[in-house]
Image (cartoon, rainbow, N blue to C red):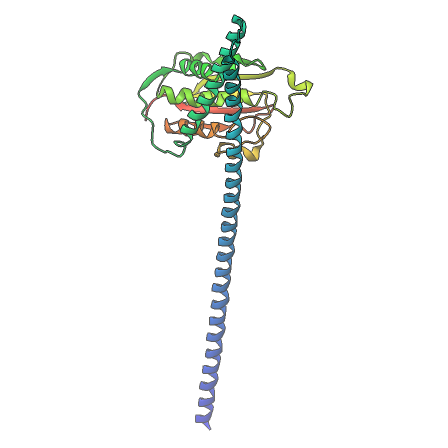
Length: 296
């Protein structure tokens, strides 16, 4: 009787142990199945985001190609028109007319050249190679040359000011002058462009009021700050980083290719600086380019 009782206890023990093991294995199965399911869902979301990003990039590239076609076609049509006018047999023009034609030809030739240069610069936008910084120049020189290159001080639709803090006037930077000037000029060109009336708003009387833009140069903590402020269309907080992506243009009614800020930030970072949007600024937009004063 005792032997039978022990056998029953052992059988019961093994049954309980088997049940516990089955429950344990089942729990492990549920745990790993859930973990695998979570990973699959995460991978699916990442794949979906990547697919959406790819579609968005494809759309932006298509828009870019259309915009480039428009940007090139417009000056080419103007050049073609003036060429036909000048080559008309027995055509005679006074000096004022010839001067105007010459100015238009030069203006549109420069426009095409600028566009081609931007395209070449875009090919370098992903380049992470540090640009050699051997030029010892003042912040005033960088600001002045960038203003001249962008032509913002001659824009008829806005009032432009250059404000340099007293402590920044005599500071020199060890940098690359050409890259610094080009980067800042592209930011200034962006301010000039997006304060001008767009094609959609050109007949809106309120758009004829003069806009304002200012370049502030200051120094803080061994870095030079170039702040470009304007009273243009502004940048939503959610687009503060996206605006630097290739081909991105927030308002399709303005002329442009959507690559200027991409190139500007790339150049600034390759000489040790950066360009950011001040999201706290209201009444327009503020871009801040920073450059180190000394090499590290």
